[in-house]
Length: 238
Image 1: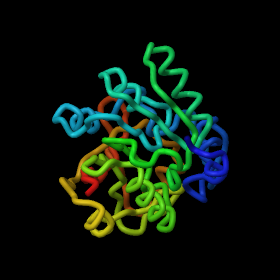
Image 2: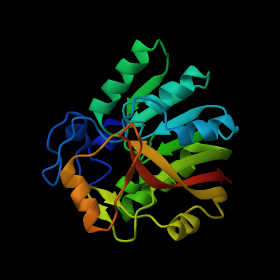
Image 3: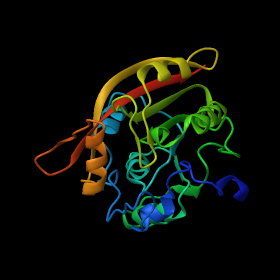
Image 4: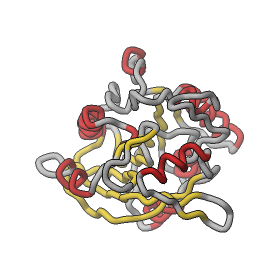
């Protein structure tokens, strides 16, 4: 299991995600009544990948947040472990699982380390995590993913597809070129990489204003959910 020394730092040096999940001011004067990625259910994009058979075996939800993806997969019969750097998120996820009668494991762990899980998982799902990591942290995170996935295992990863140069509130632009360069032989083979969209609750106006400074103007659904452009990656561990 993850060692306590591995969880002392946040994934993003700019944001304390425990404060974010508690609704307190975390960075740049911003606070959230509800984190934008908490829509109370799994992302439709994730459901699509599951229905087409891309998720198999024992599953790790890396950066699980309040647990909706992990709980959904566990409810389908997968053996799932949900990990997050924020203890507050893990508490929320554990409560949601108990309320829904779903038995699974949630633990606090640093996604750039993942000690104690080597060679354990057949699938890793990662939704909106890697774009919260700076370049050095991303390299450590990918190395950790390489260790925890079994050979032949799959990574399903969704990362924000902002315009080049967007770096605000701990979000980093990650290009298609970077993903293709990162997930390559001898450790990885890309099965698929395409544009998609994820749903999110409406963020506070100061964050929308910051997005606008980078000429990013998100669309919204009829229900008021923000549509975030993402790159959907499916990669196989060689």
